[in-house]
Length: 383
Image (cartoon, rainbow, N blue to C red; front, top):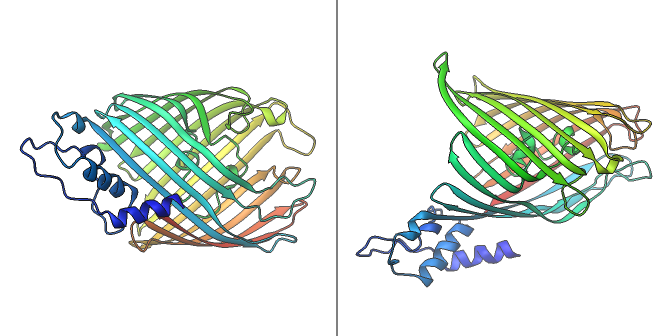
């Protein structure tokens, strides 16, 4: 409802061009929007600003600030042929984010989201899959940038673990369903704590443009903090190498005590890689191992989860994606071997609309659920 009202106001109040003033200073420089025939929240912010402050400011203070407002929504139809399962037609996410920056050094970032993840599998006493619905504070942090190689962030932020987890916006990823390690929530989506990170650029490796990204972080979680399973201190690190913006290799480490599992210690290792191939092909893979110092009967001490995907951008705004997934899945009351073969068609009719159609075959060995098929379609819009 809020997004619809905002878009309606933007349509009714188009952003004006920058005012011509003797000083040349623009009172609305912090919220200046990019031209786009499809209105968005940034255009709405500029339109309101120019209606309230049509003249220049007496100083250049406005030029030091930048305010970016945006959001996105997505919804889907999903179904399976699992015995006792159900289908779902729903709004899955509604996201609003606000990004404030001063002198390109200081940043304050807010992200809130309504989220509904439907459970398509019949529940029983042994099955832990359930609907998740509600509003969540995704991120709220302050950041100081000393230089490219040294930045510090404090507050609530996405966990820098592998590729998929920090991306976290479902509208941006290739598929409707997340990989098995993410569905099992091996690590939490967010941390509440401090992160030190940066990028180092060089061309010394065979004269290739090289970027090394690093991240060190620590946090704290407990019941009532909406941080997922962690109870107490968390620690993690991520190291990523990029070559020519075509190849990537990374490793992540993360440790926590799991409050949902009698404070057992969980140590996680992630290895991930990506490479761009000829003929508009993209290959990506992530492997994670979780070691647990103790566990319940029927569950493994060392859980291994893995996927490999190949994406073909056969048109400028259309792709085909295949993903093979394997994981020791804990969501069914015991650990079962879970294999999935997933096929996705993605289309981007215009820059801010994303459409996907997906089919997956799920194979579960010796579990209480049995094999099943998944299919779905989804649509997303940036605004």
